[in-house]
Image (tube, rainbow, N blue to C red; front, side, top):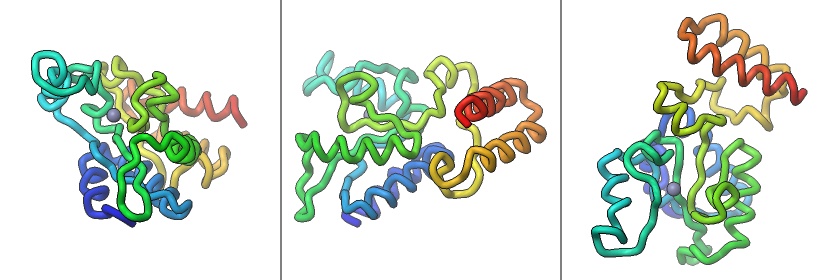
Length: 190
Ligand SMILES: [Zn+2]
C-alpha cells in the first residue's frame, strides 16, 4: 500500500482499541483497491490549541473549531485521511472516493466527519458512541475481543457472550455501565 510506513506511524499514536479498528479499515480499503494516506491521528492538547489558533491569531486557513480536549483527535480515536490516486496524487476533492471510503468505514463502526457535521471530509472517528463529555468524565473505549472488527465478523450472540464475560471481570462502575449499555444496544438489535 502507498505510504504504508507513514500510515502505520499514525496508527501507532492512536488509542489501542481505535488503532485495531483503523488498522482493519486500512486492510479493507486496501482489499477494495482504495489507497489512502493518513495525514493526522492522535494529537496533544497543545497541538490542538495550535491548530485552533491557525486562521485566528496565526496565519493560515481555519482547520478546526475544537480547542484543547474538545477534539476526538486529542482522545486518540480519530484520524484524518486523503484518497490517493494510483500514481500517488492526493485527492482531497474526490468526494466519490470519500463516499466509498465512508461506506467501508461505517461497516466497521467508524464515523465520517462529513456525515456527522456536513464538513470535514478527511475526518474519521471511532468512539463507540462516547462523547467528548464522556471522555472527560473518564470513560474510555471498551476493549474488544481479538483483532477482528466485531460488527461484521462476529455474530451478535458471540459479541454478547464476550461482553457479558467482560462485565463480570470489570469492577469499575463507569466501565460496567458502558459495557451494560453496549450489551443493551446489541440485544435490542439482535
Ligand atoms: Zn479530524
